[in-house]
Image (cartoon, rainbow, N blue to C red; front, side, top):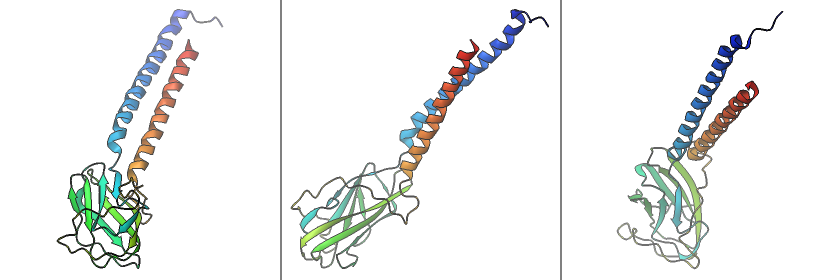
Length: 206
């Protein structure tokens, strides 16, 4: 059977190459969109705490302060502080000023390790949560609600330190920002792989 002339095969090959180029262009546009959406998908994060996580202070402070990456939403934001004996020493609702969240402490504040459990509503409406702790070397008189908003006591070590946002296992939505970024990263890898496949196909058709 005679081989069809080259001119009869050209239109089909041209269409295939055109479709392949169109598909590659669409994948590039999709990849760029996913890359630009990645920063917006991240929720607010905990920048630092005062006292810092693991800090040793002279006496327990009048309040604990959490600094977020953006101004959080008051609705749903909670900070609970437990003393060495497990008694809750936090008092009232947390106070939000710009990106800082302040929780007053009250009552008799003994020496020992204090645990802070926090759940803060990000500026995008999603909650993030975690825990940190600090240790008071000596007992202190409790701060009354009127004076509880004063500055925390200075520490024998640096009390204002970056505190890792330890994810609370009882809160399934905590850390959603990280999982979202992972999903975006996987999608970008898939798109890049698709572009590579299209380029390889074009090379084989030459």
